[in-house]
Amino acid sequence: KILSDLGFDRSHAIALTAGVSVIQIIAGTWLSRRIDTVGRRPMALGGIAGISTALGLLTLSVSPNVYSYFMTAAAAPWVAVFAILLFRVAFSVSLGPVPYIVTSEVFPQRARTVGVSVATACQWIMNALVTFTFLRMRELWSAQGVWLMYL
Image 1 (spheres, helix red, strand yellow):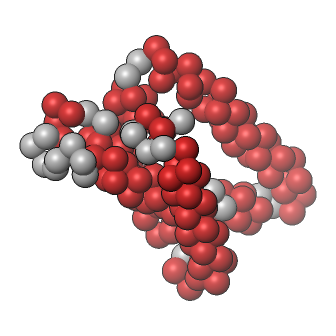
Image 2: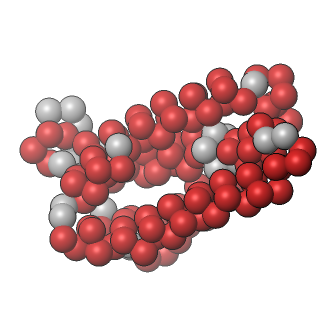
């Protein structure tokens, strides 16, 4: 829906989505090999910075009165594609897997099962909230408003 709204036809939107997904898998594989050497905190903070940057770029790419100062109208959809790629890669190396790793390490053995279960339930509830409200919020507000809210 997002790529279609930016002017990409269905076949290009599917191809771009597949390409972003392949890169996301590569990023997740990289994380699994590097998290112990880089560290959990730097990965999480770097990912949050990347996610914030991506949401800012998405907001700019759908705001003609703003992006006209920085780019052409033809470049805006490609900036949005880059922002989506950046968001998914940043999420894949930070807020996607790192909370699962940290929660399994932070709780003492006697409370680990309950702690990890509660943390995972909270994460999935928030994921569901975003999933089920995103399109409706986009209908009620502009795309800029939704991206800014998530930022």
